[in-house]
Image (cartoon, rainbow, N blue to C red; front, side, top):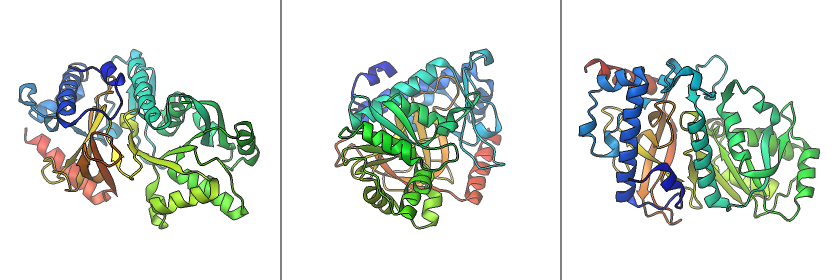
Length: 364
């Protein structure tokens, strides 16, 4: 059976359907048993679901838990003294946030996998990196947020790291221009959060009638915040066109991920499809009975990952809706499933799905 280190030794989108399914099913079964042994709350959940390791034949048979359980319970699979960092999900004021307990091994594997995936897009040489955010985001390391984790994760991929926004979240023209002058003619790496880039980089440039030139060979990776943009009719195409025009950035990759499964990100390809790497997979679930949906049928997104060791986050039912477009046959050449995110399900639908899940537990 392939181990995580074996996967790190091959390109991140190289396993075909049968081999990947067998590999991930074995790894996820082992993770499930490990978490059942070390996390009493998770063991109770799996027992209520009637989980039987001997009945697991496919990846779809691995028990999953709703992502919101991480907002309501402290779920960790290690002694408290071994927790090196508590990660929190993003959330607006007053909202509950997920609390994810990390140990050194899980944190290290998150960084390894993220690096392996991203370098398959940009190459293995560390590039000058501009973070389209403020450095103040990194200050509270005791209860660390997903935004800060994303910044740190990308920081290890770059060199000569600079920040585009000042302490007040204003575009720091002096810092950005110094970065561009220092690395003139070089390929550059940029990272930021989707809505923040629009709000704090693109709009200020537009208002001042100014442009920046990062160079057509530079690459931007961005994540999250699409709801606010869709509310003002900013589509993916509009977003990319605006950044090409204002910043001369042509290689723009959106990616999908969550605090509850850091590292195993789902990056957009050149054809606009989100891809599951060899380290993870996506299952679409019918919200009524949680059965796995076939290619082309929409439903709730379940994400599985080989990374989580310190908490039972290896199979999570999200609150997002999506559709699998195909497997092993994307025109970009990457193997594995590729998919489209349709958006967050409505609050009423989330509550309904949670009620259904709770009812399912109560009957076992």
